[in-house]
Each structure stands twice: as structure tokens, then as C-alpha cells.
Length: 173
Image (cartoon, rainbow, N blue to C red):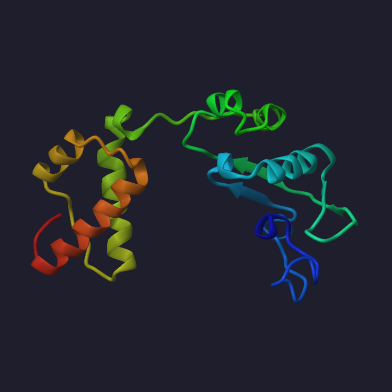
């Protein structure tokens, strides 16, 4: 809650001064909440209040703070199932369902793999000051056969590791 809503001095043992939360930082812009299903029930209730009233309360404050934000959230679990188990608020679920975008697992989007893999290799080359490397045909075949249970994050890290190894060995990825 502290990270999301901020806190006033004295709100808790480490709040020695005003703490800005993510909502305050996103003022006038977009706040992205990854893994929204991991929020506590109390934080879910406060987030619902923010979405309904466009105001929130920093921890330890009795004064509402206006918020002008756009909210985008993501999760990798089925929220309908979490609702039926009482782990996610139904009213928050429907409040968030303004423009739902379902992204299938990477294993269901095999046609995206070459483009993503090449992009991750290009980014790894830039980040690590490596001359541009290309992915070999055999590597692309191996990439297309893999399941990628960690989805895009796993692919990105694998391509970064492969790029660093290939640069060290003087070969293609």
C-alpha cells in the first residue's frame, strides 16, 4: 500500500517523511500495475475506491487526494477463478474490464517467435555494446520448437544470454 498510495510522516515505522506513491508519480499519465491479482484485499478495496471516486488516501492520511491517472493492469492468472476463490474482488474485476486485452501464451503464438527473438538479440547487442549479431537458422528452429512456459520474459532472457555467449565465442546466436 505504501508503494502504491504513498504515506504521510508517521504512518508507519519507516515513514519519517512524506512518501510519494505510484499513483502520485503517475499523476496526469498512465499507471501500469503488473500482477494486479497479487494485491491484498485491503489494497484492492482502496484501488476500487480510487477508480470510482478519482481520489485516494495515502497511508496515515484522513484527507483524500485527487488523482488523474489512466490505469492499465496485467496478470498471468485467471481472475474469474481468483474471484470464485475469494482472492480477487468481483467489483474491482468489473471496474477493470473497460478494455480487456487477452494475450495468448507464447506457445500459442509461434509465428511471433522469430520477430521477438530478433528484437531481443538486437536489444541485447545495444545494451551490452556488442556488434550486431544474427540468429542462425538452427537457433530459430530450436526457438520455434521450445515451449517457453515463462513466455516473453523467458525468451528475452534466453536471447540476451545467447547473445552474450555468441559474442564471447565470436559466433552467431
